[in-house]
Image (cartoon, rainbow over all chains, first blue to last red; front, side, top):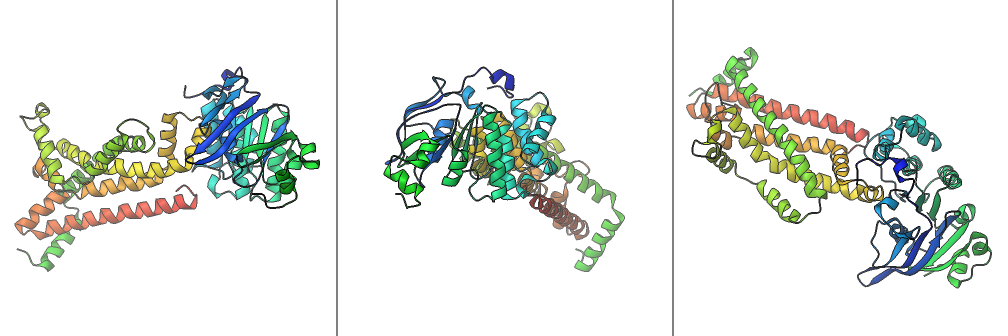
Length: 248
Length: 235
């Protein structure tokens, strides 16, 4: 892989639809993901829901290539997932991992990797999008929790991803930061990026989702339009989950 | 043999007057040790980072070897370098034996494993934190290493200063390969050993005080630097 990858050079790599084919992930005796088949289309925001330990984060990591499946494969536009595809994907983690540098330097790290034409302008645009332009020179790890997550979001957007995975990015954030992140996610989606969002929060799912994938015990129990899922979930687990009951 | 009072008085005189012999010995000590540390850092930082993040056959063995080399006895290092640089040795033609260059080589051999092993630990800890991010962004290996070394810079400063402390306080190896020749290879530690053996405690004490002063200064710089880094959450 070359040190810097010009964004224009990646434009021709088709990334979607994203498919999981008989995807399984086993650690020791435990099956964390069990024969998952699904297709993610570009037009919709997909929200992955389910109780703790359902396998949502693991599935996200498999789709992003951070874990190697035990069985099955991930396909991008019908082709097996490769580094070329992964370069057009990005993931926002629940706990933002920030470099021990300034806010601006955190963005520059990614922008240098992807070599956009005007790095300075791009950095300012991204910081403006997440409301951190006035904090560009501050140490990144001295920001508040919400600001750190917004910076992490700006950094993944610097990749100009075709597919954006978000793993419970607003867990533990204040409502203002949550709203800002949701708005940016909607804008990114409208601009043509496929969004796959993991959330525990049914209200957030209703605000964001066009499509819901409901998981439990490493299996996909439902993949349906958000309207149908929230109005009439077809599985008992999903009904219990939405009713606020404990789902095992 | 001077009594202690006279010895301290003479040491004070030498320090206040900035005695030329004292100045020369201190200057050479710093030149040899600082050069050795710089070379050891150039070798040890990348080697440590490679051990921490590299995935190659023999990595574990290399780590064990480098860690074991941390405990190398200085006189053994001195002997090895002596054999290499003596006329009968493979590097004899360089004629570096009993020169500052030989002392730099000995100190570099002595402290490179220390710097590499400590760097490996620091970088491995940071890599655990950054690993998923780097993987997600498909960061090439050499950029990962560069980023890890840069972000660990304040911890690596401590590592470098630990190496400097070891180098500047070293006596056995530099005595063997330098020969403790006046005005040529005499450094603080070898001079202290010689003057003490002769019973001339004034110069020995003055040099000892300078050595202590250097140690305090280094620690002060280190503490201030780290405090500023902690303030900015860079460590």
